[in-house]
Length: 67
Image (tube, rainbow, N blue to C red; front, side, top):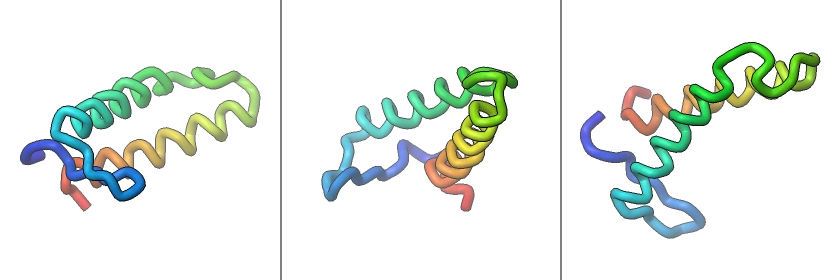
């Protein structure tokens, strides 16, 4: 990754520090939900966890400029 990602929320570009905060928060959240059962051991919790992991990884790749 070269620098921080350019992120716009509701038409407002984030500062470098704000973009870094979003990137780090996403990374930390993905680490937090990495283990099976992190959002509940039932079917719904696992389905939601898998969806968040997939979307989070996709966003991470976009932020890294790898898409």
